[in-house]
Length: 306
Image (cartoon, rainbow, N blue to C red):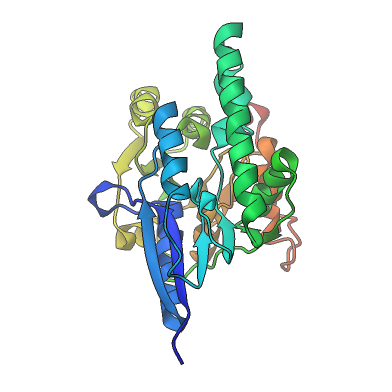
């Protein structure tokens, strides 16, 4: 009996072999599927650099010929535009600038420019609705993704949290504060940097990752020698950095899932997040059922959260 043939659709991996959160999840899913079926990872060029490249990405996914596969699994936007009668979507996220971050990015535009962005937003919503409507089932990686999908697109979905493999995590010393992740304004690294600069603690803040807004964050931190940017590091290095951290900082707004929280907990490290923006609720999902019942959340000084 022949094995089921499954196509897993994801965006083309970043250059130089670097796998960030979504890409790493897709590759690990491909490895898991390959154990039980004949799975092929199809990487589609996806770019949000310009409006034209956004539309090209949608068209590229729509035009894929997947007829030789028994089933198709889509993941990150806009891979859910694929056409197949047995299409399952495990949604990582949509293009958030056209959803919950629209006002943050375009709210200050003048009326003519804002009107053009609203037209683009509405088109993306319509295209996304077409893709989700054709899928047999829609799953998401987290409750925040499901909430947005229901609020903006009207689709119900089931949450399937991605697994996190324990690749040698351990708890070592407590030598520094640690902030890993993409260096983008939405991850609010600036919030952590400003808060840290208000402290007088004689230990460092180590920031790991790369991203579009790294120059801005470096400029913000340049007058504090305790704050160090380490750039992109290997998997083995990230394990060591988690292990020897005093605690982990993670302060994005309405994060899709929050790998950093789980990775910190696997290394037995506390996590500092912020009360506003919805992430505190997401954090609670991971340990409310534990022995402490979430009672160890503390309230720092208001200045640290503003």
